[in-house]
Amino acid sequence: MITEASKYYKFDWITIILFLLLVGFGWLNIVSASHSGDTLNYFDFSQPYGKQLMFIFLTLGLIVLILAIESKFYERFSSVIYIISMLSLVGLFVFGKNVNGATSWYAIGGMTLQPSEFAKAATALAVAKFVSDLNTDIKRTKDLISVFALIGLPAVLVLLQKDAGSTLVYGGFIFVLYREGLSPIYLIVALLLIIVSLFSLKFGVLITSVIIVLIVLGYHFTRKRKPLFIQPIAIILISILISFGVRYFYDELLPFHQKDRITIWLSLEKDPEKLERMKKTIAYNLNESEKAISSGGLTGKGFLEGTRTTGKFVPEQHTDYIFSTVGEEWGFAGSAAVIIVFVLLLLRILHLAELQRSQFSRMYGYGVAAIFFMHFFINIGMVMGLIPTIGIPLPLFSYGGSGLWGFAILLFIFVKLDSDRINQW
Image (cartoon, rainbow, N blue to C red):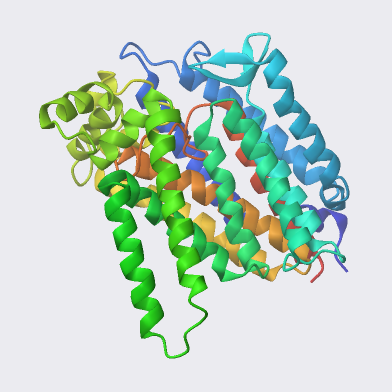
């Protein structure tokens, strides 16, 4: 018989330890990226590292509260949590504070709160609750549309607040639905859309259209059992329309700063001198980030010894570009260690998700993994220049109270759900 005292400590401590490692090491890098070079006072709450330390202590209290609440609460009230979260996003259009062109924060006293960070956990709960309902079958068109609506609503609201980075994170839910029986065709279509879009921007609509025709017709005529000829024709026409649409959106509708980032990433500017000037001005943060990472070598320059970091060569390095601090001061070894810990956390979440007895807990676990992965993949790719510059924090690492609290809520609701499985043994 399990006593109440022993139940209290029956959580997955591997997940908790990985979380603490990332938060602790992240804070050390925030110290490096934000201190001014004078005498260092870790408890200086006027500095980003002092504020982050306060956020961490508040996070620990928040975690205790999450783990103290009965796990059934999260499933039972998931719809209410989702509605409140969506209302908080809508309220930004009236009461929100504009920061760097994005209206994504509420100003509360001397602090700001970003509700989009909490909307991710609310959406994961709502999707898990809806799909795990006895009457839901995502293979039915009606139910699938409803699920996409649940995911799409916060994504659109966040996009309207000019926070494109957070919007992309919601695309990760397609992996959650795939695990629950969504047809692979949706993943294939999503991949093809990305390929057609990139080809249209890089090579133009005409060349992309010719490539599409050759591939589709070549595949059609080499098949032993050929479908009706109208099918490849329809695929060709839709693909060409998408190609035209992507090009029109890029040329006429995309904001200039986002257009410039894509231009630099794909080297779309024909004039080499102009492209080089764009890289030095528009891509300044990225260039300095890459220099900082490469200067770290194998083992790095040491804690607080990064010359590009202490010299503030990378603007706002303690936020979205925090990984460049790791690269400079801890080198390839430290960077690899951070990536390994992130991967271990993701694998641990997926492993625990597969062990769950309820579909709700399993789906929520996959939602947690998907959100963490999207943030991790996009941020690391952005800092290293592998994908266009997108403002999105590195989970548990980047400076910010809302981000840290949002990820802690997201993760520790799952830890609490998983504790039911552990305590039933």
